[in-house]
Length: 235
Image (cartoon, rainbow, N blue to C red; front, side, top):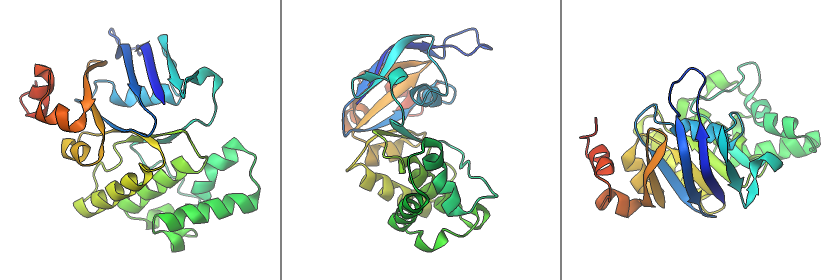
């Protein structure tokens, strides 16, 4: 479903490639977690997938087709909630459908209200974002990422700074979404990766050091750098 083929990327202000000849595949229906230290390039791969950044070389494909030729193929949940404070909860959900076009006002409202109900926010459509808790905002961001029926879902630290109860609820939601979507999640929470992902990729300096079934990667890592990272000896 998602393929990185020898992809490189370098920020103008850096003297090294943050993504260096990266190649890896995510299969249809898989839930993949990406782990690694801050600054290693994890969030950059998401920005490359959704075309906020363009690779210096290589190619990214979704469902066998270059993303250069595709539109509306991915849903992206960034680390920040990025909700417009002057729009209601429902109006924030309408945004991706307004940008994509092709929906009537009735269709947009019906889809937004159905999405709110699906995550337990049925009665919150007319509220303002400031009235939502952190966990509610994350649920709203997941909803917004899904409203244009993407082929792949990208979650960037979906439970960062949330309390354990809110984290558990977001994890339950992602497990439900796993039934219908291919999901790639960036996380610093290694316990979270073991709980909900099929495979895990360990990133280091723009490269995939190890990419394997989650249980195997955490119990029997094949690379010493992976072992040092997951045991806290990395540095």
